[in-house]
Length: 108
Image (cartoon, rainbow, N blue to C red; front, top):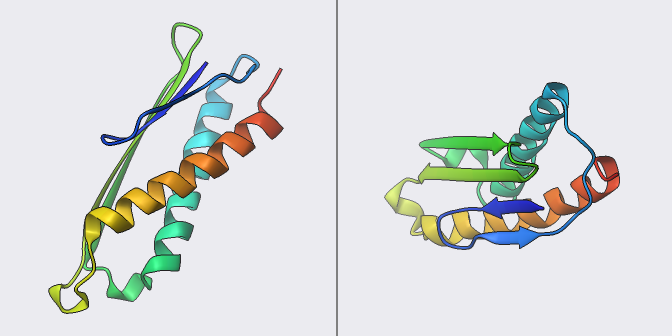
């Protein structure tokens, strides 16, 4: 079982995953970070973001894989963009892509 979650929309997906190694976990973390950066840059050019923090927590204990992602985004007020909407859309796209990657590369 995989639990992909953010604060507003936890998603649970059942995928037959093989046993993941530390190297797999590090690779997943890198993939998640790349996806988040990609989807954020589709919405906002990097030079227009004052600051952002991304926290990725991957827990592979108890035969479950839990991936928690937290994005804090700080945009200049002049853009008038809703940070929460951008963050949520980024999370949704990231989870969709991550599920595909897990099925393709880490299934048993």
